[in-house]
Length: 253
Image (cartoon, rainbow, N blue to C red; front, side, top):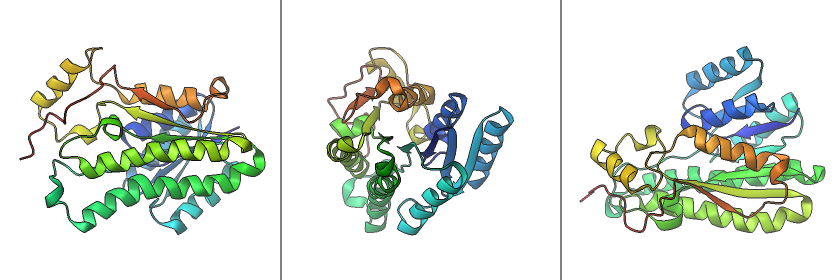
């Protein structure tokens, strides 16, 4: 059975990714940092449905925690077949001049450095197998930027750069690296949006709806599958054709 590590897997998009992949027959290592209860509940639900899962605590910005995440996965499931770099945090409604060093470092450390550290550790297992998949979760804001989300946008743009460079580096080793850039998805990360904001985003999305976590997990399942074996270095926009050319609709002045 192929195994997959999902960072930030206890809630939101990460939780849906874990559920979808377990139903597809993968063993899932659910990484969590603060949401222990949710991770354990999700793990139990997967097991009760006949799936295979473990929950592993770890701060992906911490090198020792990253090593432990992969070591525990290896001890339970063998060499991980895939890594989904999903963990991410955002600052709510913040002008750049109001962001503290601590906030800036937290976002970059989790969203970008964490993904780099996990990818680095993954290659130490995957290269010798001459196969593997790395899926990075970016954002539409990483492609076009969002007012009042400058640091988040920068971190997600970095994820796109990571994807393209790492794909070139790992292709000779049979490992594919791809990126998913979600549009506006109905999770707690948009809880700071007013209903008016959400209505605006929905109306500006040509498909006429806000995305769901399942939309993202379906894309992850495809990119991990053998059907995507010749696809690498790509950024897949799962956004309902929302190509936002102006800032986020929120007024953060």
